[in-house]
Image (cartoon, rainbow, N blue to C red; front, side, top):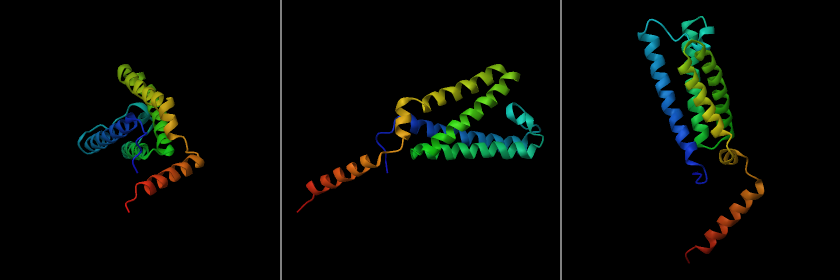
Length: 152
């Protein structure tokens, strides 16, 4: 079912999340198999095993995909997952900023911008659960429209 009341920014954000996940997965696989050193900045610096870092980065990428699917379906759980991922990304950006300030600041800025958009009034309204009376009224309006347009 297509939700025409959904802001265009939600769909665009979902497709950007899909593109980001593809880039992350591709880079992770390439670095894991062909580079001598795996990422050791940000939150990954606290993990000793190269395999564990690889697994964590892939899991984050798959969570990004799941969040994008949730956004396209206007699921509140997809929005909640994206908010959690942005908070984790902000913490990661804080640790990255300690070693590479511009890149860490960029990560924090993107996370704050996405969080601000997710908490904006128009977006929050879309993810709010629908009142059951509104749903029943909508069904009745649709049925009456179909009855008035029926061909005899």
